[in-house]
Image (tube, rainbow over all chains, first blue to last red; front, side, top):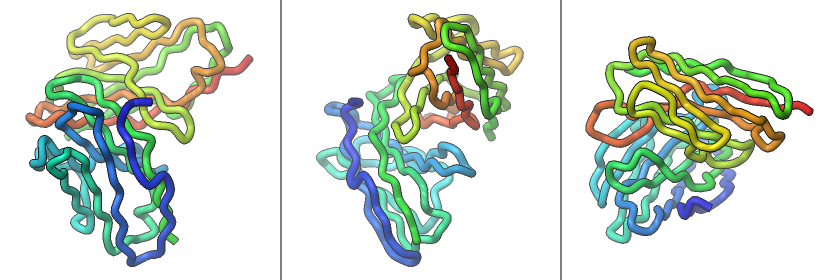
Length: 112
Length: 111
């Protein structure tokens, strides 16, 4: 158990819909990262938040957005969903300057 | 940009040694990491090389050569539970701490 929690574990929805994925980092970790893992694209970095502020952006679509709240939990919002958005979405956290990232169990999103 | 290439699949016998290679093209990075991921599970950290050379952690060792743009993960005394996907990853020198992952290698350990 990495100490990072993600909800829900599974999510099934239809094209065009909007969903919110939730992540709670390890106690004390200020950084939260979101990654997408699909069969054809591998593990891709989406976005990083540090202590409530956006720090880095990767290959995140404009239909996707995220935020980190004062209690440090983070939410990833996916809107106007397409079939290609079906993937595993991981959240990770780490202490500042630490080389290791701790990954949550992931949310499996299926868009029908 | 970044590009990290790994063999897609490797098969090895229980008790043997296997090497998983990672060749990269990157504009600059702080270090090379390795992560293990079992089917349906989350990536878990195995090792990190900030400098050239070999790092050993139990049955796992990792190597980095910046001059050759190359690294590898060495798994010794293979066990069935080592069957998993293995990813190399770099932390680009962008000021952030995000990881850029390689294409991944699926290791199958056979009896």
